[in-house]
Amino acid sequence: MKKTQAIKVYCRLKPSLIKNEKSIKYEIKKKNDKEIICFNFKKYEQFQFQNVFNENTTQSSIFEHVAVPILEKFLNGMNCTIFTYGQTGSGKTHTIVGSNNDKGIIPRSFQYIFTKNAALNSTEENEIISMSYFQVYNEDIYDLIPLKKSGNNKNMQLTERVKFVVNVNGEIDFKNLNIVRIKNVKDALDILKSGNKNRRILSTTMNDQSSRSHCICKITLSNKESGFETILNLVDLAGSERISKNANTDKKTLAESRHINISLLYLHQVINALANDVSQKHVPYRNSIITLLLKGSLGFKCATAMISTIVLNDRSIAESVSTLRYTKDVSGIKHIIEEPKKPKHQQNLKIILLSGRQSTADPMLFVNKCMYNLIVKYQIIKNRNFLITITYQVHSLGWLIMEFSKLSNCSQNNIFMDGSLYSYIAMISDYRYYCILLTLIILNIIFMIWMWPKEQYINNVKFHSFINIRQRPYNQCSETHQLWTIWKT
Ligand SMILES: Nc1ncnc2c1ncn2[C@@H]1O[C@H](COP(=O)(O)OP(=O)(O)OP(=O)(O)O)[C@@H](O)[C@H]1O
Image 1 (cartoon, rainbow, N blue to C red):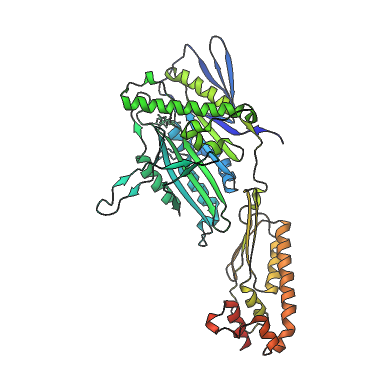
Image 2 (cartoon, rainbow, N blue to C red):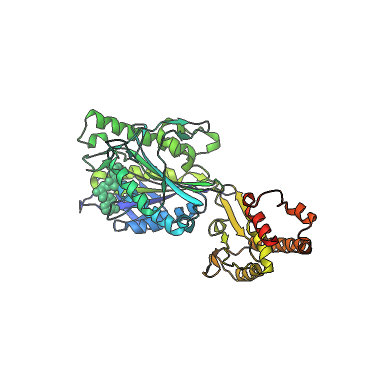
């Protein structure tokens, strides 16, 4: 199989407030939508991106181009990551978190997920979404989701240091990280809002709201029936910075800067090792917490996008060149990416057929009612990426045939509404589902043929030995047995 670029790399240019500046050392220019060129006296460098977004690009456009393709993969069962990288003040937090008026990728992602995944809004609660929100500050993990204290201090909010262990696979297992179930977009936005207040922020020379930590929003989509889980990490890395450029050089700030720079250096080492032949090299994930946390995202089974943020003014040009070079190394990571095999089957593969028929006079109803509890759950899980769940409640053979003919006309992603009989039918046309339906029809016919002659021996022992209802009081029987009893009397 062919190796492809493991991480899609994008570049976002930040609008510069300082106009008419010209660097004497370097000049950086956007060549076209996919390239940036950089020259100094001696050399000319070219940097390739998936897309270069200029200063006027809106948050929604960034979301469309970068996040939507990743979110589609996430909804199709692939673990995904989006992270921002760049110098301090270049717009990482703006891109990934945004503000109330100009939302970034995280809030927009929740909106998108809830709009796209109809199962999340269903009352069945088969699919659930949960989130955790935490920061890596000075090589410790802190929970950003506030805990409400019990007792008198109800409104007091705490951020807790998260205990964790590194498991045998070299991944982090959290001990006390808050994982909150999200039922709607508002829940998520509320958590983000209060979580952002808990981030370690400092006013520096380069940015009056500089994040002093790496921040991760981990969104988990889980299917209750199958236990299948997909993870989306949205990461706002702390900004690389020159300590000499920061006027605020107290001990604490220096320690923070050192931790940030060292962890980014370790991340670079991991990227370099991955960009070279992985099989030949030891990949130093264990050097820092952020590399351990991003381990899965830089690997083989994850769709990852990186947005590098660049400032094109003289003061920042050296850092921008360094960001571009960092990005080039990230582009060098090549893997055989394991895409979900048939993503189109993942969603909407639910047939829920609910009967509104009440008549007990219908002879067919006997068979139908007995079949009522027959719930066929058909699940295919292939490579953790491929899941089909069909919940099928059989009611009426005639009706089933009618449905079958309806479904044969059903095109991909069509949703039929039939308020009188059924809540809905949502399915994708595929020969397997027709096979399953056909099998069920055949089973139904066999069941009917099998039952039919016995109708005349209803009070006969032979019949009772089949269904065995006599041995139990009526109210302790299962619904099927009760139905048999009703029918018999
Ligand atoms: N593309 C943009 N358009 C408009 N404003 C921007 C853009 N990028 C950044 N800004 C503004 O620049 C300031 C600094 O941005 P931000 O805090 O996102 O930087 P950062 O890279 O996260 O910095 P740090 O690493 O120090 O946290 C903010 O006020 C932000 O609103």
